Length: 201
Image (cartoon, rainbow, N blue to C red; front, side, top):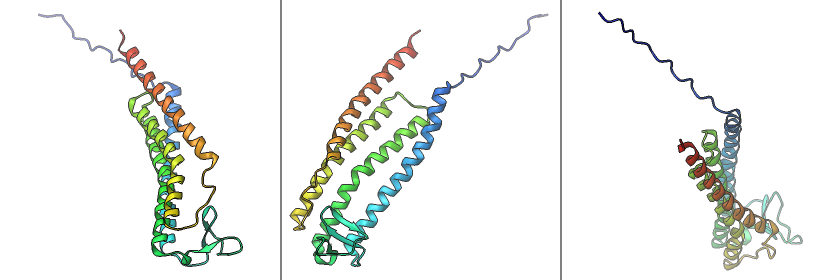
């Protein structure tokens, strides 16, 4: 007769998430929502404006120094021309220019939303985070060059364009993009260090 009794080992307590990581996840959910709304608007508004440049002939849109003016009636004295003053091909070029100017912002907002979704899921120092941050950096670089491309396009289409198309914020976007690229490399290195630490026994 056996007097051996089997005993159940107590289960290890579930590891609690550190308060700081929990706070990061909570705030990141909010920011992911903000970037989702901003992304939707950054797509919808250029689509509406591009369609208006193609088809709208009323008084609420005009073209002048700086591009399309919304809510300003055509006024030759102020240098604002009605869209009907331009040919169909010129208006098509204007629509493409609107898309060129909008695409970098859409690209940046998309990757920022994805980055904060990763944070909200608890992923902080990973290669996926670094890739998203590098994509944001690329988007800022594209933002810096988009006005030049749009300006050349409308110029070749024969539309008088803004002579002062290059602004200080394009330089700042390029510098910030370069800075973010370096930060992404640092984050990636931090993730590798964290993995090495977790694997050390």
